[in-house]
Amino acid sequence: MTAAPKKSFFEASPNIGIDSVAISLATVTFTYPQVVNVSRGVLPAVTNAATLSVVARAMPFQIPVKFAQFSLMREVKFKLDEKSPATKGINTMVAYGSTGVPFQSVLYNQCISDIYKYHNKSAPSLGGTGVLGTAKQLFWKKVYPGIFWCFLRECCATGGALVLGPAIAPHFAPYIGEDRPVLVRFTSGLVAGWCTAFFTQWMHNTALTAGSMSELGEKATTTASFRRAVTTLGVSLIYKNYLQRMMVIAIASSTLNTFPVFQ
Image (cartoon, rainbow, N blue to C red; front, side, top):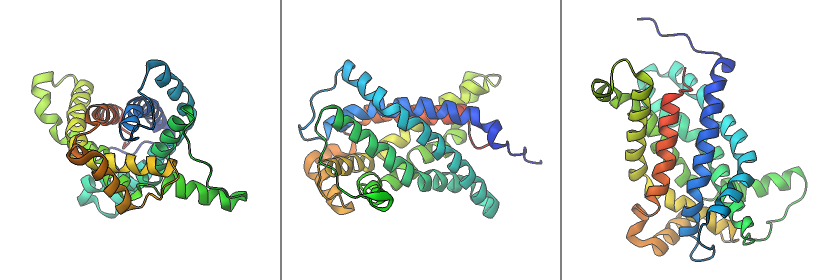
């Protein structure tokens, strides 16, 4: 059977836009308490008023950057499929993980920065003037902290859920109804997100720890951030913040499965 032709970018833009808004809102809302939990007491407890303020501060940056990420991810996925059509599942995970490294590192670390700045706890600027200085500061403070853990997290969490969701959808269809494909996609995406979120939680907590270390002016290398996460969280590294992050991954997975960008 001949595959359906790929939609143009403009045809896919509504789905990309819906996904970007929903996932950005979920990410900031549910990441806030996670950042507080790994701040070692630096940040005060979360309140509804503070959450609304942080969301309002973060959204103008989060939404367009997320839109750019999904747009690029879509093209990377299609290019990988052209080169290796037999590994489409792996291609999806690699596309999400590879675009997640620069974009999600920036998005999460900027979210962490917005949270710290809201509470007047941000570390002093790293310095640097001009375009090169600004670029270096952006890389070292927003991209580099937790970059290795970010790749593993993005590749295996939401990237994995984009593969798992369609794989388990046929098992839900007989119970939900073959004539309700949107609900089937949403449900399978939700369950897939719950699963992949749990198995990647330790990666996420380590990446959050790296972002917090950087915001406080500490050097957040791959090993240093992992050691700090283990020291701070202990065994809870594998489940701390799971409920909040599970909501983020489940919403992301169900949204992306319901409004797919890979068309």
